[in-house]
Image 1 (tube, rainbow, N blue to C red):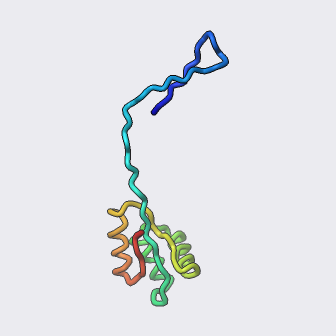
Image 2 (image 1 turned 120 degrees about the vertical axis):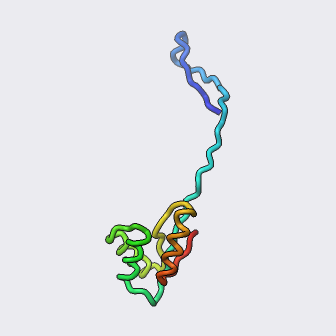
Image 3 (image 1 turned 90 degrees about the vertical axis):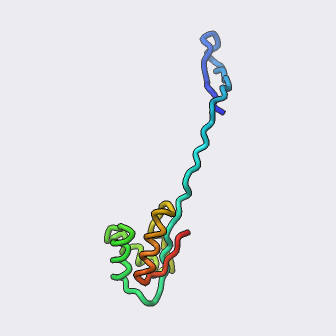
Length: 103
């Protein structure tokens, strides 16, 4: 429902609200998903950083920050987007020996 507000020239103090039905178009927003990277005792910081740069297209500093967050917090969201975009990236991280999932 859309409401148009118009002023009557004779009554400047009180605007008139005239409801006007317009065709509604429902647009479903695609839900943003994310890749969560988990800490492990196997991979080096350098390997994790290299993977994030190569696979997730991070800048080096961004990848380094994510690696430290994973190390200290146990996990970190490293990429957001659609499932079509994230699933291949997550698979590539897994193939590199990292622990990750799409949520």
